[in-house]
Figure 1 (cartoon, helix red, strand yellow):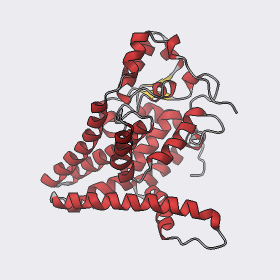
Figure 2 (cartoon, one colour; figure 1 turned 135 degrees about the vertical axis):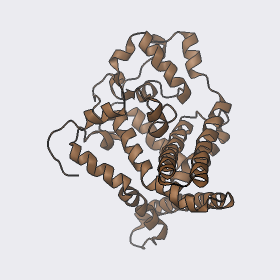
Figure 3 (tube, rainbow, N blue to C red; figure 1 turned 120 degrees about the horizontal axis):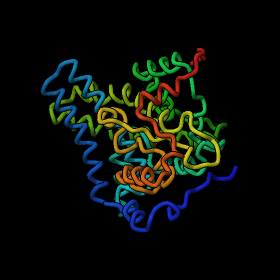
Figure 4 (spheres, rainbow, N blue to C red; figure 1 turned 90 degrees about the horizontal axis):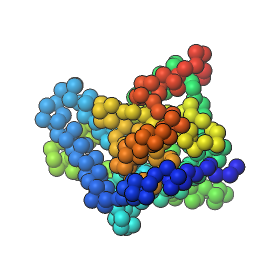
Length: 319
């Protein structure tokens, strides 16, 4: 199937508007990475100073959301948006964003650009994330429970651990590259988290490396990642209009803090103009609204509204 249609920005924006939307700030990209890690540090400091169930729960939610934020900033680096210097962009995206949460920037970039090329088409590698929807409420609840109890984390991470421990047999040479890639990715992840543990320990918060950082990664991160995936493409069109392939969600301050950091909720604008830096997406949304084009976009009032739409089937289906 051919690639999805592209929107010519010259038909929508004036030269000055487009110049503003595409303008990038390397310092702002660096600041986003600093902000993400600073938020994690403050959340851990909160529960270290005032350890109680409420501060622990809040810290887990904040850290899990900022772990998603690291993945979002890796995505930004995948589009070259963190820094004008390619080497700095790659370093920030790979070592300070991707590796600590178990991802890999180069492999993600290749995968993600294919998603942009074939959005909501059979060749879209992310189609499996949106195609099953809508689902029943019972099915969503089961998935959410698996996320919040660590079952999803275990299912996703165990193949990487097995790849690290696996020794390819002589009669299965085709598996060698996969095992090598998986082992390298896992070693980087473990190494980065060993460094993080040391930093937690030096700061007097060693127990919270497990109690907050790992717990958040095993529970809240999979849950908010699922919500993000649902909001971006579930129940959107597979037709020819590129304005209809992704959703924008008007996130309130609490949703931005605990579900959708770093303007990830403006997903339709990102798909329409994928090389805009993330901090310009609200401006793109405003201009599309002013010019009357936003009516072609699926815009949801909030994440609860998205989940209601995505769980609108009344029958119970297998998990």
